[in-house]
Image 1 (cartoon, rainbow, N blue to C red):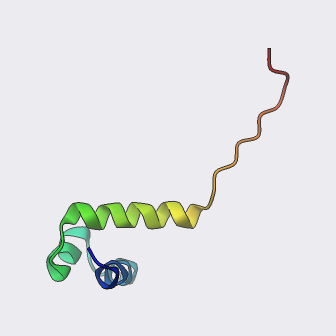
Image 2: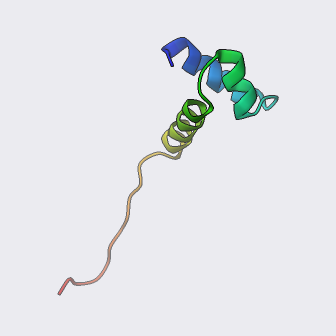
Length: 58
């Protein structure tokens, strides 16, 4: 998948009118690549994970 296909994938997904299979067929890429890109975009949107640990360590 190139940069243009990745951007198009995100735009098509965010439109809410296409599922991963439709996007993969339209862009001539693998559905697994579409899923990986969407997962990465969701993780990026969530931001970094911070965990606060309280208490003494033994």
